[in-house]
Image (cartoon, rainbow, N blue to C red; front, side, top):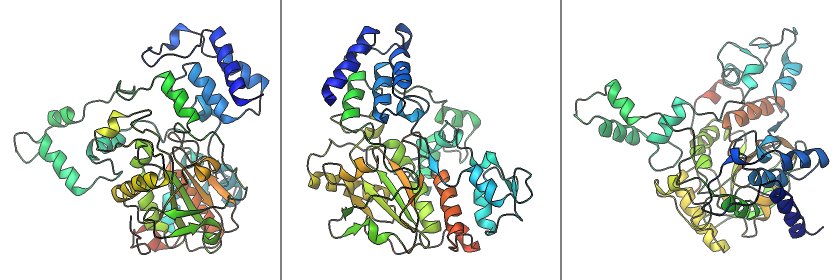
Length: 407
């Protein structure tokens, strides 16, 4: 069946269940219609259905945008280095945890793996199910990161303090902090909430995410050659593979959750840039001004229409590179989204590729799968497995990484 005919058939089935597409102005009311009929029927009738179909039916069914709905339900993290594999490899005494004496790496690597700081590795250290949940730290970060760069600088902290200290007393009271940091709403602001029509368009324009699932764990990483955002050089992935593992990061300027992680990516580069090759691929915009426009982007000065030519995309990538200043190369995908689609890189994704060119780690779909600490765990364990000095004491200190290219 032709794709358009198939989509019309699914939409017709949805309409019969009371799930017709809303207009841009129609309010979304999940309580007013059955939300599971179409999705449940498809899951039962088509077990190996494409990921995009789960997202399509979720949008039709008014499922809220969340980590357990749509394609986020099934497009989960794939890693060689989860808890079961780690326990099997290192838990010599079979007590269900890995003590410091059982892990062959260095103290600093062990400390980074030990996320709950209880001096042993256990299932809890490998559980990232709540990593994307709202937290006081995330709330404070979003308040302080005034330019949307994914990094909080000393100047931004000082500006926050000055604004909150209205009396110029030199200190902040509890009331002033409560006023400066009100409890955030758990729902998306009205200015950022998309209509169903916007979501459908964004899905099939690959702004909500790639229609393809990307390479699976242990498959060979598809090769590509792309130009850097400065237009002066190009890199071929296959030429980077071999000497060191490759950390491959996909993202774009208008994806706020991706930008918010850029400081974490730079920290990873500073820690492991001498032992792994870091590369970013710039992909299609997630929230262009002519698509699912985000007021939260515009408040920090991030706004652009969806580029229509390669040169336009390269110019936006150059802006993004200057803002994020990651320190490692940023390549620009072709305007037909060849690499981003092949790797399921929209709106953002990250992969860990071993020395043989195989996928060793692939995060869950963004934005709910954006968990750099999960990537770091996999990188530490891969480096340990491949005999790299990943666990040296110097690894915990953020020493100067390799020379930083132009943003």
